[in-house]
Length: 88
Image (cartoon, rainbow, N blue to C red):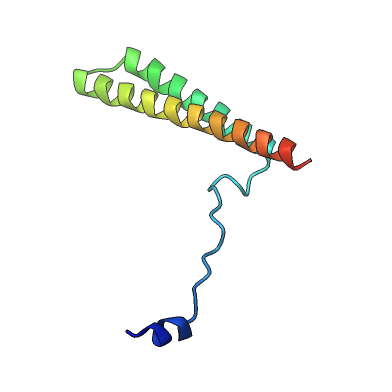
């Protein structure tokens, strides 16, 4: 491809990258974290009464995963609040 051919090609504009949570309002994002923590608590409760080691292991992993998602959501909300405050 020659230089003149390259310059004649249209450039593709990619849409701005948006977070999957961007469509939710800030309060709903906070509620997402709360629901994740509720799920983590339920998995932990079930892990304590697990019928087998394998079940307990899976529930422990799920507890950690739900907690991680909740913490990441909290961090995302903090970033969004900071950005909103800077725009004012």
